[in-house]
Length: 385
Ligand SMILES: *Cc1c(COP(=O)(O)O)cnc(C)c1O
Image (cartoon, rainbow, N blue to C red; front, side):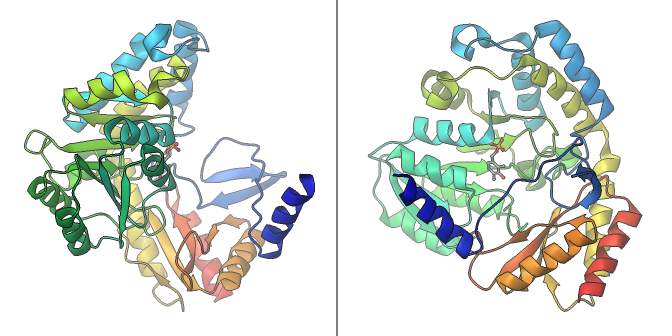
């Protein structure tokens, strides 16, 4: 039994696909410590620089004093605290939805939402480049699973029209994590309305970053939840929000259905209330610190201009995920390693995560990257070019 596993692991190693974890000895930030060395990191989802914000640290300590550490029970038994409830009310108001529900993680939220709303008689339509958690959720639901080419709404519409099903659910990332591009949200909503389909939008990367005061991709697309009640909005709280967890916002009937039957909500211990207490502070900072989004946008624009003369091109992204297209996998890995030797962390993303021949460096920007950080990255890239 072991030799089987060893063989598999060996094959993975041979293909250069074995992944290793780096042990980080500092908080998440633009500068992190690994093995006693300081690295400039362009590799986290801490887009607003909140993951190590002193006010959040303070709020987490205060939350521990108010609620202790462990929630001790699931939400439906005895684990649903005033802090959890306050976050649900705050994110519902912030995203202009009537109701919201907290999940422990984004992965669990997607599993719970999709399996609670669809079953064998239903059909799910999903963008090819959706996050893995959405695909896993679709498979677990046992609904018919139809994937359409990335952003191809013509194919999506045809499949919607020709597929008989009790319920139809369209699923899309709002902002795609490997491309940095944004789904055509208004068109997706109109299409779902025409075909009486639900639309689940995963805004893990847009919440806090896009829209007015960081209200997310739906707000950026000027969507009004009152006008289109079939939209189910999901976002995570461990990326731009800098804490942990996820939420789904939707009409009350949807939220009540999830409370009653989302298994990844029901059969798990509630997350520590101290995190929810910290989230209340995070939501306030997201809303009030417009300068963070301004600084982030400045970094994005600056990078686009400063990489103009490189032999490699940035993919057309206006978001903090700025993929630099290298093409060849070994080349992408070589550049990533050479940057690392210079103390700069930028991950190489290779097939099968992205299509063949499109290996890339995924540069993730943060509001807290300073001008000298940006210069250091682009100088190193120029040198390597
Ligand atoms: C990160 C991510 C998730 C998972 O969220 P976690 O809270 O980290 O489990 C889900 N969907 C997308 C698009 C993501 O990027």
